[in-house]
Image (cartoon, rainbow, N blue to C red; front, side, top):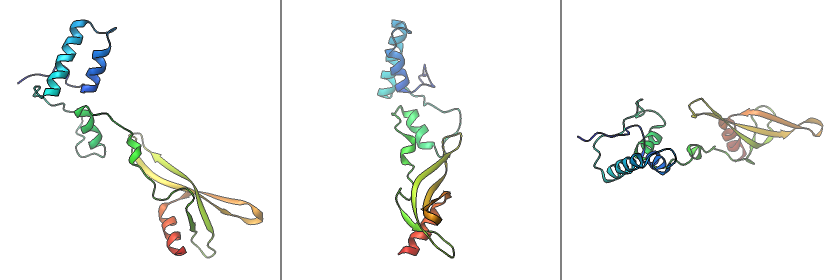
Amino acid sequence: MAKRLFPSYTIAELRTAALNTERNSPEQIALLNREIAARESGASTHKVTPQIDHAAGPLAALHRACAKGEPIVEVRATLVPRFNIGTQFKSAGKHPRLCTVVEVLRTFNSKDELVRIRYVATHPGPIGGVVTDYDVCDTTIARGKLAEA
């Protein structure tokens, strides 16, 4: 069973290290290139195992991509709000008003996971002013859109 020389590094990280000629000697670069070739051909039998079990977590696909050496695109690209800016809905209550979504607020925790999405909505207020609500949930907008239809 062949042992990996750099078990915690991905192929992309090994390629970056092999290109760094100022820091690595020719022998080290040759060793890195041999390890890259062995991993790409499948000759290396050991698998990269993460220190933490990420198989059940929300970032499992990201960690599997890192272990395979695939490039990581934008993680937040998949987080899409339910309603777009400019969506109009009627507020709840005895005197419903026509509100407009003007901003989408996303809250992330320290693990960079989406915690919640809130909307900022405005409607005309008394004496020609504008009233802004900074904490509108998507259920309120969905209910107001149904009331319009």
